[in-house]
Image 1 (cartoon, rainbow, N blue to C red):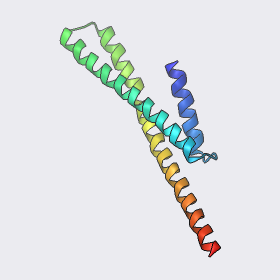
Image 2: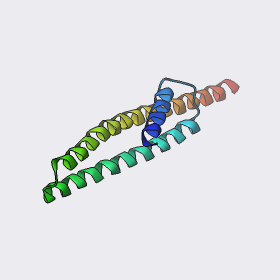
Image 3: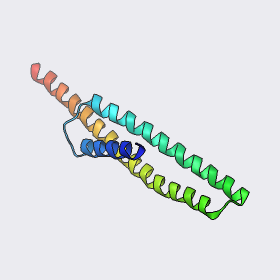
Length: 112
């Protein structure tokens, strides 16, 4: 389920960034979902890092340490990509707002 959510959300972010027509409301909702997912990934990374500290203090088997390292190595790039997509989404939303304001100003200027 987690992998499916990540893939679906990432695909939707990429679509929004590919200049697919979108409303500000759609972009805001997508941004909120992506922000929530980023928080989940960050928490998972922090939990794994804590687990690694605990495992090294306990002199745990290398298999357990390796599993946590793999988890962090998998999650960190996902979080980085998600943050990059979020930054792009923020730029896209700002662009839409700017275009809308320009249109409003042009309409006001044209009606005078």
